[in-house]
Length: 287
Figure 1 (cartoon, helix red, strand yellow):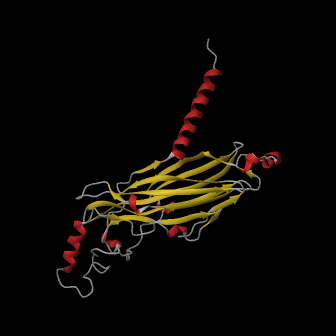
Figure 2 (cartoon, one colour; figure 1 turned 30 degrees about the vertical axis):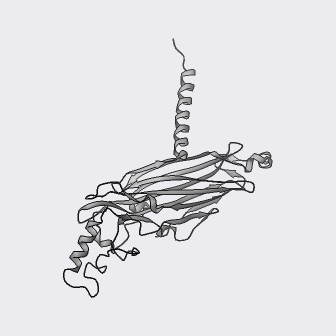
Figure 3 (spheres, one colour; figure 1 turned 60 degrees about the horizontal axis):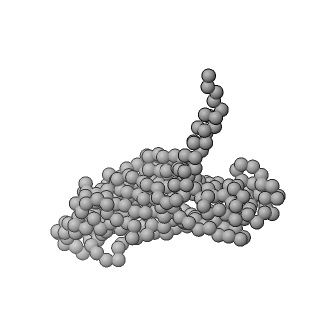
């Protein structure tokens, strides 16, 4: 599925208004303020696949693990050359290792490279499934895709906003094997819009470290979980700022945001509400 993604490099201006020539000549203009990086959630939706979330990958072969039991020949039948009873034995082997959860899809993918979208980003995703499965049709009961949209922004040394990236995190959860477990697929980050001020470039990449893919349920009824790490670099001629945000996704549908960019955005919202309330009280008259 291809989508039109808006990428705009604003010549001298970004969002709020035009930057003055004196600002551009100020050394602080090209100094990205890493402490200003903030991420805000824009929307929260579930079951909105038609609005952009990818569908569950169709039945097909999964990449094979390096070793361990493989289930069937990809169509639910016996392995080639297998004997009656082999399929049942392999089913039992997979059931016995349901709590061994792995990511058999992508682990690292680039979303934006210096303000430019990366081709075919929509087909990059991670999953968290039982070790030993070989075919998507062996998992069932998937939810509709869940989607959350976010806005990442950063200011420069003058306090002006110089980077704004809109993207969405989507995932499909709740898949089970013979009624057991809650697994993940289609876990992805997709950029929607990028705006940068003159002299600024931004790059984004996603990573799902193997060490973060885990079972947070029980051995009998596992719940898959993983960390999706969104890493960004804001680049200018005089300074690069690199940091990351973490999304904790679970097979029961939960998604949690972790890291300082989310905390800073929340603090800014709280501060704005307090200032608005103070201004309202100050402007009030009492008889």
